[in-house]
Length: 139
Image (cartoon, rainbow, N blue to C red; front, side, top):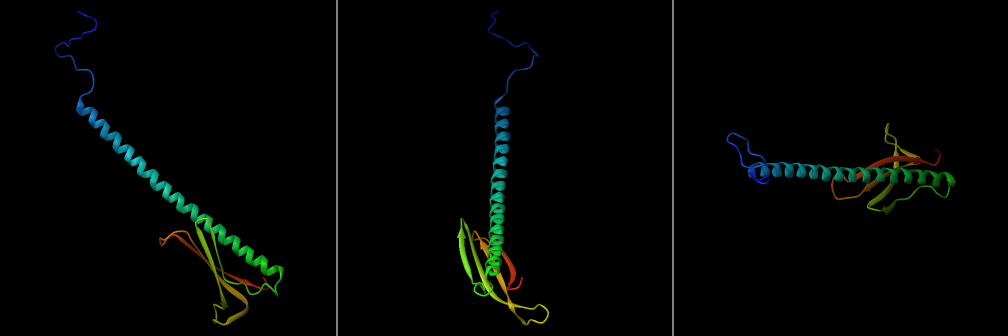
């Protein structure tokens, strides 16, 4: 008997994979890769949203500090603050200044202003961050 030829004895199991087993393994691996890719895409999208939200928050915070510092430097000439808008990267920031009113009796507070900030970075309903703060000549 040649050492390169192997004949199977009766009752001896066959070695190797059948075509069905190979196809089943390919399908299972393909499903696993598809699921992994989908998870990666969802994670990337969520990460991008969170990054834009964080940047928008920092931009609003910096503008609030800037307005308050500007007023504090010269309360006569830098009062009242004005409306503004800016675009930084993909984020568009607008600030709207209006009269401040007391929550108790809705009377106008003469030396205070309400400032509404809106930061947006997309067209979706969750692609906007809105913050309201109050500024005054005296604090």
